[in-house]
Image (tube, rainbow, N blue to C red; front, top):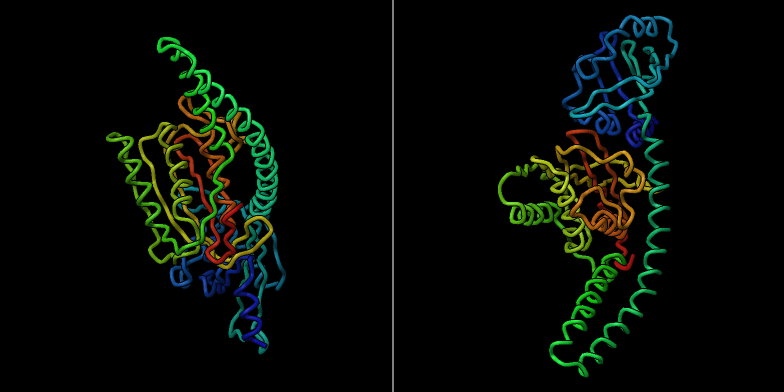
Length: 355
């Protein structure tokens, strides 16, 4: 029964931290490791206030909980993490020594739920629904546009045969513009070529993107790596994933920014849409540009939406479509001097090559 209870705690999405009467961490479950972005080895034995300074003023209250064996809940307590801060709802419960608990002395059990997690899931579901709807509309429009474009180009070629050399410049303009619009329509429709999945190393993808960006921008940019080398390979389309990450990196270059960080991490017991995955890849492109304009934040992944003078407004939409084909999603957070686009990809998933 004890091992069964431990197994349940280990698989909870709620972060659980156990501290002794001196408020030193004695145990933490995998969800707690994910929340604090630290391993259990790094956390166990540490004073709780060192890991979470905002709990220091509550030390007296925690002592009272141990004495009274009551529980306590505080909502929206800030939890500082590297480069960001999250809000959590925390419930502290006293666990008294007993044969059932197996404890020799009283302890505090902390349950932490990230406040913005539910908001993220709701936003994610809305984002997926909106993306599917707009992709269906765009692909329908692209199909309707391609047919007359082909006819226009063919008519211009036929007309060209009957014109003098000096007059053919006009039909060549028509043909060039028809080809340009054809390319635009193809990009709007997104990737359509089916591929058989192969094993993908995300760091080969990131390094390929890094070399392409360095070749495009030359000097004046710093592209920093921050990789987790333990990330396993997964099934996917490497060419499409290079395109997705390249679009995110080009967006960072257009920001404009001077520092771009390519980062890889693992998320455990992570939910994408309505599906929970044991392991999820988190690939990030971070820049130090001015941030996403407020007016574009709700429509940033729509086709033809861009805040850059030189942008086409297709890069992020295509990247999102590629992520969806792999069962994943792209999200972003933005503030001045720090914008992060995050590609989430399940590491064990059914690959959908046709979208």
